[in-house]
Length: 83
Length: 83
Image (tube, rainbow over all chains, first blue to last red; front, top):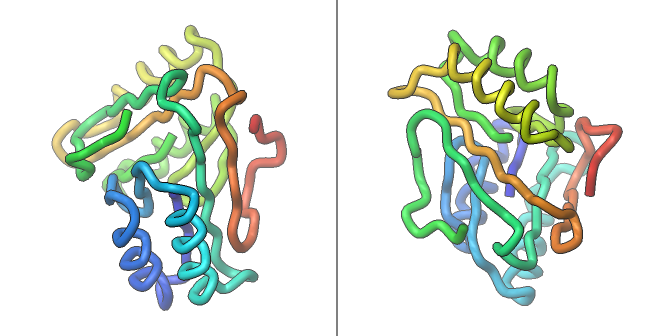
């Protein structure tokens, strides 16, 4: 989950995201999530997000088999990473 | 590609990223890239990134078959999206 949110709402969005996912770096969270919890996450975010100003993008990978993560520089967060 | 870069260097990192990928939203780029160009991208970024302060994470999906993108709120960038 990557987000670009007006500063008035960004704290709330981060707080909701952290309930379901792991913080990776500024504006980026990641994690394994069930379909039901993903729906709950989107419902919670939907109450906060301003549809005309804010943007959240979810990249959903159904398997980690064809996915890879590479990090350059420091690792900021994400102790229990999925990939 | 998602990045969390000291403001002194963030403009340079964005400029390099845009040579190879499409801007999606603040600190997020995305695109199809060959292995050779991905290596070039990392070499260019490696000259700028401070290994103790900056962080860049690449999520590499070898196929789009098991991947999906969902957007909440406005679409900020990315006209020619891969997924």
